[in-house]
Image (tube, rainbow over all chains, first blue to last red; front, side, top):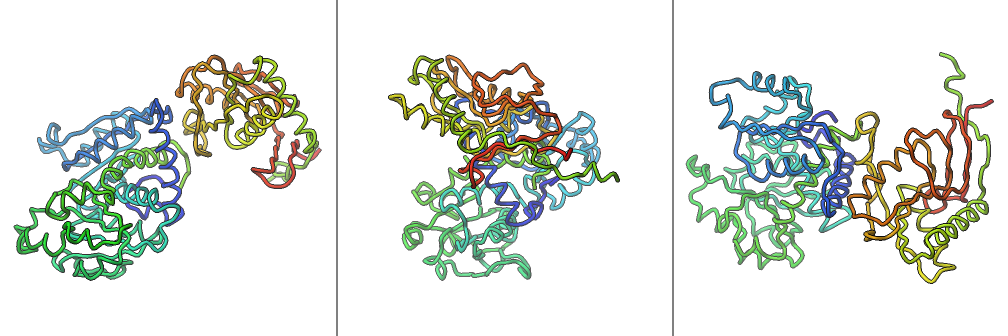
Length: 307
Length: 187
């Protein structure tokens, strides 16, 4: 694997499972008194974020530092991009400084692929438009595997909400399906992709119809700016039909787990009390993000031909 | 292409059978206790893969004649190696190191060769605390050191050629009977 641009780059179930095993190794490293190994000493990882992010950016930076790589941050707001520099020129500038990996987030789907074609460095997609967010899907799968272990075969997962605009949903559909999960997409027709032909999923519009049969409810963040596009009538109506309210949570099977990629809109797609309940994996998802990104950076920069 | 370059390696010498291997480990267990005036302060830390199995056996052997069975740890040194990027390096197993501050840590491996794994192990161990002393026990020392490393306990000193291969088999890792063999190109 030269770049991680989409879940498909991992080459199916075996490759994904290998990455999750490697994540477990780094999760152990993070438990140590000195949670740092010299594995990537002398390597440089630059993060190039054309879109806001706190957790993904911080977690990649923490991952690189715990592998002893040097990190550089390229923040669009304070860079020459605001003076009109093109993406290609920006990449040339960064590469001229000698970097080994570029972690990129961009609002345009496919931007990391474009960069990968230009750059000698390894490219990691940290979220591109509505396309993919592979490290999020890996950390979700890892979090779920830790809880449900050793395999996810037959696990029924509903991904609820704005699937249409969600890169998290796309990456998760591919990853969870590859790992043997049954994936159900739930949400209003206006927030479903134009077509799900070829997607290994079932589409349901009524959350209450499937609620009692799920092992996992994965809620997507409601992108509130979408209301301006009139894709749903009001936030209140959205919550009443597709939100995980305390009332709906009470109807879940006692073992059903709840996940959310963050940032959470408390009281909209998920009630605050549900986020903080025992069935919620939200905090674990964040905690596992660093170990997953360590595994990805190590595979690209250190492990040699790994996947 | 010259056929001899690709000759299949053949078995040259059976170095240890299972009884020899057991006797060597029993002797090392006694040497560890003798040198450290007992086993109270000793912690055995095996290096993956076979070092971990050997460390467990040494601990059992010590426990059979001393009043204490030393704690056993397992150390994966992949992320501390100096050949990362030069060849594929993969972690081999979960690291678990018991509290070793102020104790004598005996690192345990199957074969001592270049000394680079032992070097990586010293660095990795250092992240878990400051032992009073670190010693090294190996089943086979095959020579060809590239670093100033010496073992404190050796099952067998085995002169080898660089082209040869020392193969250690342990029941709990490889299945089948224990043994140590020297393989090389056909004469």
